[in-house]
Length: 610
Ligand SMILES: Nc1ncnc2c1ncn2[C@@H]1O[C@H](COP(=O)(O)OP(=O)(O)OP(=O)(O)O)[C@@H](O)[C@H]1O
Ligand SMILES: [Mg+2]
Image 1 (cartoon, rainbow, N blue to C red):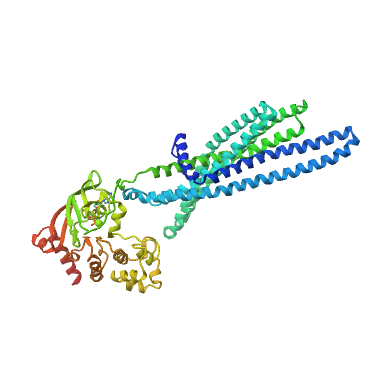
Image 2 (cartoon, rainbow, N blue to C red):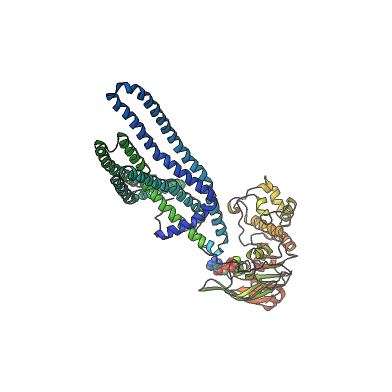
């Protein structure tokens, strides 16, 4: 997942992105504050552990010091010392326990905040992806959509993890240690610690940045070698046909040998990094210990102080070990988050206008008035199309492939806005209605039906969530689908496969018809609804279609002219212009494009029949 080189982005965008993120985390303010409280408590206890250790040493040390001088007092103080040091040791244990208790408490408290934020952000991303226009989705590559979703959860989670559980605690601890050193031992200790930590951080970041290339190279070669191996196994037969096993093995071998070289480099540079870090720590700690030894010699501090300082230093550098990894991880997560936030800021092309009203169907009259439209400005698709479908009537659109027929349906559903001209339903411009109310009154049998990877029942009831079993069965019957479903061993519970691939083209089309019958909308668009059906099924279904369309206003896009001879009006669309219009008989008499198409199709059908 970190295989990508992140796009350069400035700290300022990082900061503003973090601010946008914090909205999601801030929902549970109380918990966040409690968790922070736990964090501070656990860090206080962590730092207190060496403090108690110091007291233990000093008590024991004082005991041995006394014994040489005063043998009588020794027996009395000896017991006290024992008690005191036992008490201190117990406190030491309790502190360690308390530290992990508050640490775990912090994680547990924060879990709700973190998962809730992930949950809300992902929902937001999905909602937004649904809001974005069709044109946006058509430009995407398959797979990148699911990445958008996983990216939103994973980047948020990593950022929170790294910041809250790693970076902030380390900074808190560093500050505490600095304060203790400054307060108890003077500025020169603090100075050495600050300088050591600064050098350590700089070295770690620079060095990790440099050795990252070997990791990237390793990842790249790893997926290359894997891809090659998998591909050669998928093409098992081809490899055998051409007797190319040794070629495949050599290629795999080459990738793997490069991979192992990169692996060795990655490992040796890792060792160098670790050694460099250890050296910086060793030098810093030695300097501090020299200062401390000097002070002990001068009796300004005790032996216990040396132990304290040493323990504080070592404790401080443990979390810093992972700094390189943490820093890289944070960079990747921030880059991902940037993409998610950019996605969320993308405005949908089609939006409800301010004050949009709900569309209420009165008669269901459709009007296209001089509609012009182009997907790409330099290639107009519709060049001034005007027509009307009167309430309850049926208007058919025919014409050559690519002439813009399906585009009419996409515009009616408002997947795109017209470039000029208006589309009205019952006299209301569809741009003035809410999209949801518009689509509520429209039904479509699309040219390509795609199904959810679920059961037949689920896919049918998708048109109307509250449909009863009876209604679903009736719709299936009307679409001539019932016999097919009954012949399936699992009936309505049969899974249709991804995108409905386990159904034949005609079966899918009948599913789509059943869905529209179930939805029972006021306006129906049939886009080549029977193109995948044989003539016989077509006839049966036409009855179902007509039943569905009886009460509805329908726009029928047809390939086979025999299915639309009864239309109230037929529009012949050619290259985005209506070149002929009228009913079937008029158009035949006209002897134009329609008559021509009709002749061609008739003679083709005669050929099939004879
Ligand atoms: N998203 C898009 N971006 C760019 N061009 C598009 C897009 N969708 C469709 N087109 C183009 O618009 C033209 C009209 O497409 P449309 O789907 O309306 O044709 P059609 O008349 O329904 O054809 P068919 O009978 O083959 O279904 C086609 O030339 C097509 O290539
Ligand atoms: Mg089409």
